[in-house]
Image (cartoon, rainbow, N blue to C red; front, side, top):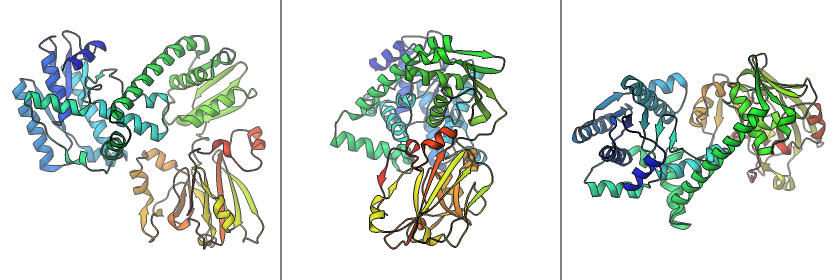
Length: 497
């Protein structure tokens, strides 16, 4: 318990006289959090209120968790709010996963009760194992440095006193104190990515690689958080030289920008986009495009997510709200058809443009040699032309009735269900670029292809398709050979289909 108190003091999580709202589920982590806060109040007086959010997803078991928490709070003499949330309604309304809807509801309720009670802090029970899971999950997703740093011990009004305490120690504390806890059976199911990391990946690493893997991964996240904080401080200093407002626009002085290291230049551009309110859906490809724009001639423009435009002017890069379409990351709403001739043994090539993207395609006769050359990449796919040549191939966004074939037996899955399972927000689902033959989705661009479209040894004709971002004419000439390799996902793997 002493180590938890030290973390509270080190990060100034709770000061004398504060009011704290604690999110308590009844699980081991949250029971330990409540116990630690009650014990800490013996050293430092502060107000404490418990909030238990009942998500309405597990029937009687969920209600039993709420009753357990209520009785636990009576035992500690702490006020307890039991709030019944409408998570499924939020899932339907926002088109998000149940997991994400539950998280949003919890924090909405926490902040509502915090404001009503005049509290300053929200305490949650994330621990060292949760931190390791977060770091691994963000690493697998391709997150930047901020994501690899995991969760902060204190972020805004949210504090995490248990973030440096592992799950084994938490349960040991509860056993020594004679405190019971509840177990959510959904945490033992591998339906969610986090659960698979918790139940399969981390135990394997601890068993086969290093028994201290959880602590080492969480420790690496903490070091990266410190690195990110240092970068933020340097970026703050650099921003005073480089970034300024001009009316509603955010501008970057390019001469001053060029004097900083590349890493700081990237941070400065992200800072400028953030000040423009445009970081939502802003990814590494947009950052690369901004860096290229800084070196282009005056008058060049780039459209970014959220209706933000970047304009190259004399000596500055100007970020302007509105007035542009989202061209680089998103396709046009509508459709564009590929007209392909019958394969005649010669290479049949073509190129078309869809919403700021260049689509290159080529028909090839299949052969053992070609099969060995096939490499599956995120934005390059090889499809069996045999099954689609009698249908018009169309690049478009989704329509009612779209489906994927998801296994070799021909099993179908609605495109909508697949995108929801992939946790793609509704607005992105509406803008997702697709290659289709009728209602059959052959390729979700940037994602998977239909099982029915995979190349096999029996395939006679292969359709190779590449999608590239289109920035300017110079870039077009650099990729005249159609390789597009600079924009490919580097995590290539041989696709012996």
